Image 1 (cartoon, one colour):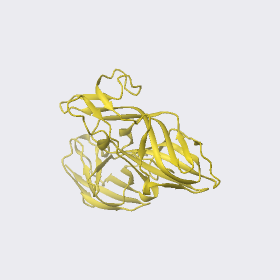
Image 2 (cartoon, rainbow, N blue to C red):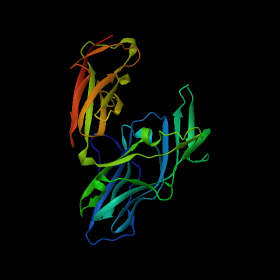
Image 3 (cartoon, helix red, strand yellow):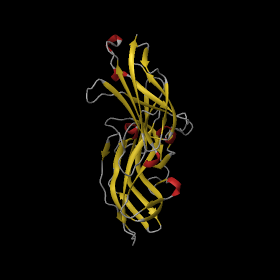
Length: 304
């Protein structure tokens, strides 16, 4: 997932909490604003639910609590979107060196490879579990509910300037953070992999897909069944379904907060559609630049 301090372009921000940070520090240098957005990098786990009880910033002036009302969320729902954890918190101007999350509970649901799944939870009575859930084993979270989980800040520090607003994007990589079963002990160990970046150093992509004049899809398929995948130099695929919420006939797959660089684009077809031809041709490539949205449009000229 990711955190962000202002708003992000081209995507819906789910405002969970607006917080004016309470602080045990003071600063004569005025105040600035901070907004935190939460996002998840793609992974293979079926569910990854965490309860974030507190978020705080530590700096030379002390500790500022950004969030102290627990939020429980399934990280997988954030693969293509973000949640606003903290919206415009007032912070003393100064330099902060640590961002910490206190995580008091979590569970993951993993595919067993035989059509069944198993649930591993921090506690068999963790309040974030779905009704009727059967817990298979333990999910260990060493000290995350006490000392908290440290998130590395860009450049190892965050500077809040008087009368300015910043946005941080915190990316919680589910596949890495929950991907380590503890041998045959029946336990999984949570090893969070979280990266914080300034929203000004990321870019966006938007892929549009429409049917050409007189073109129909076989088997009653629609463009809503198509998905787009972008893969960058890191080899991590980002997959998003095409949607047309305004019913314009043009379906779009939006990719927010991408690292700048070159990406390969492929489009996956739904069941019943064997091949398509497009103008321009697919697969394709694109370049994402910081602070910009790269938009590509494709027209389906034929389908079988």
